[in-house]
Image (tube, rainbow, N blue to C red; front, side):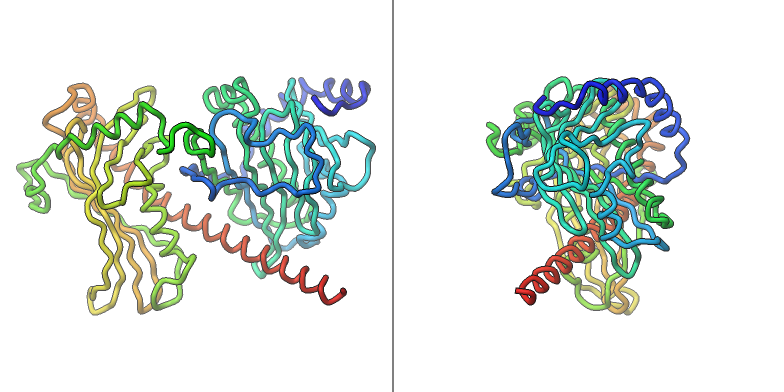
Length: 469
């Protein structure tokens, strides 16, 4: 490890570990703060970490290139009002002493060389229960944010930024990280056993709660955690240019030889004797101003979520496809998780459409696409996703339309299982898609809003510096 604390400080911290583990676990189980967790597929370079300052001392840095496993781009966010202090004051207090908001029974930020205000180039060690020290270096400090980079010996390899933004709705505090596991053992504990993942989530959620308490504010909407996962094969330097691992690439290619496992002419017939189930659900998305969609609004974000198939929770259904293939010609391999069971089935995307039509005397802009099940699937039918914007009042909504029935061919076990317990899971999946579409759109709008506020603040600071010069 490149940095080392005095022995007395290390032993005093270690003495608190057993009690800290128990207290942290107790608080984790009994926390009443709503925590909303959303996982999506990421991409490069959209989810790449920010560049490091040119003048930074890079000795002993552990960058994302030194890590193992997927790159996780994560944002922890909360918003609060009625606080005694604003964004600059909150960050200022943390820069003076980070332990003001650290869950000290669980983790403590200890400066390696002396005490005092955080400055660029300073090294810290995050001490946690067990042998999980986290050496970091301060790479950037401003009035409303500071950023840290991991050093050799850290469980992770990457960067993390803390920032606060004030606007008419109150203060938004965010923790944004770009990191991979530091080594194979860390990747095992994080990605597979998931011990480190829950420890990390509890730690940063506790920091956000403590920030609200420090500011004397009132939290609104709980804590939102969005994770964008970039698989190793999609990172620069990976051997697989398609961004897929070899097995998934072979399975995806094999779908081109498969036909649909039903007669498409049966769709829309509503034949009760054919056991077709027709389901339709609608979810309202954040409102826009009347007229055509505005850039970066609900419509644009919803369309992007649909096109990248972020609709399904990848922990339940993971859609694998080649990003280089146009949507209209795309086959998708759906990797379905049901308890300990794993199923892989194929679907084929139909021609997308976008049109303005008149419904009930009102103009509405519609965009959508569908997919149909292929041989080997335990269902037969079509799923259609559609985005609508009513141009007269700006309402935006997402619609799901499905026509399905149990498959009459293919592997016996999944077909039988679907006939026995599939209907409840099917409806649950539909509801989750609608809810996820709304929450992901809200989260991305919040990210865009915070980014615009930061750019506006940065522009004001640059203007002030120029005027002073």
